[in-house]
Image 1 (cartoon, each protein chain N blue to C red):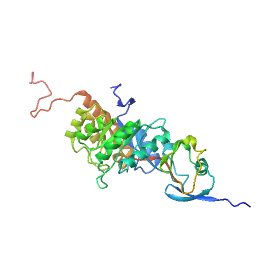
Image 2: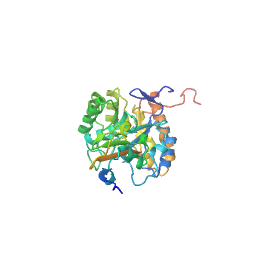
Image 3: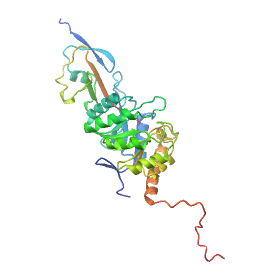
Length: 257
Length: 72
């Protein structure tokens, strides 16, 4: 277990939990939740700087990019063009090459536009990015992304922020079995047990934002997710028993008085 | 007294008047932005931050300055 690390490209991470930095009440709450979650990677968004308010706190002042890996994402992008522009700018901020691509196609459900996503993956890979790709839970599309050079496949569990948990365990299992790439469940988890399920399916990690940030007690939920990911991973590696409809006694039947 | 000539640029979607002859470096300095925390786009092209002392701003230039914020 000690050497059981999350590997993306050539980078290795101790924690299999990736957390988002959005939706927290303030920066200090966000920073504390991240610390408690034990995450080594956090997703961050790229936005215009606030010209009028110079004293607005900066994310980098609260979460040190030297200690925690920033994973710039393209949240809010609805076209390949917008996503490419965002990630090229992100790279310029500080040389980030490991990125999360997310091209949305549907404003209501926030489902990914897989055609635009696939196109963007090809371009970004050619430009030297290592692209972790948010995608739907379609094994065929996941294969296409792998062929296009993705660094990780990140299928949704359910719509972003919905908290519904993993809706299609079968497809997630198929995606896990068919690819050599890390599979990270991204979006839709609602509680710690959802992370256990993801890890027990053999997934390499989970990405959580809303479920922690919007929990009544974000700090305690961050801890819950930390332990859930560890528990689920250990359970997966331990080799579960075969399911049996009939009962089998746990105590010896011999020597009963 | 010599009158200071100004030009109009667009910065992060808003109009702004700056002194004619201003370099991109002067603008970043005026805004008090830490260079290692931002990226700059000039007329849709990404700017090499090492070269901002040499880049002169022109009338109607469109500048975007971005940074990282919290996101999922």
